[in-house]
Image 1: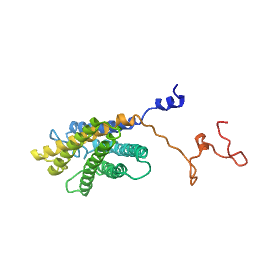
Image 2: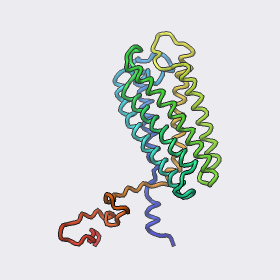
Image 3: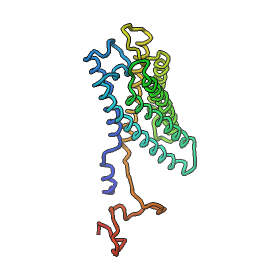
Image 4: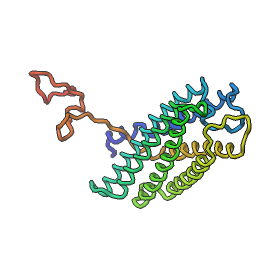
Length: 271
């Protein structure tokens, strides 16, 4: 007979909700800013760069608001993945360092760089080409795409390592490998073609190629993130408050006990 506590734990919603929230917010930011920019006539050609659809208000302000939320959710997802892999590595290797733990730490560094790039792109929008803010925006875009691609590759290698312990399937590894490869190809095309600020009346094939690659790379990030949804659904988050310098967890704090002077310190709200 199953444990009621275990059934209650399994009935809680998993952390896949963070993935759904992340992809939803990012998609709204991209699509809404594009359609508003098109309807206002702020972009003049069929495939504008993402930056072109956000350099004027109100679409720029809407994009910034949603993309700042995207940056926060990106950090949350990376933290969940980091602790998930750390938990698995502890069960497999114990407390000692291993290639898996080193990859996990490295991926977190790349992930932090990518999240920072998301925030910079959101808050330093691209305007006139000679505006100093455009240079900051470009740096943020490069940081976002390059660090993001590096994060996807390290996570792909982590997935491969986890297939050896039957944590991940080979199919999932191949899916992430294909997405990472397609992402890297489009990031390279995007950087070479320089599809950042091409708001001119003349449409050049190289500009269109760069803009298409930028949009494809953005959707590759989305596809890679969605691949974690099923895994995250099997996880729950437990935040515990413990006394400072106690050296161990305190069961008393499970009941949010506040000791009262002169009262028995072992008394809890449950008694």
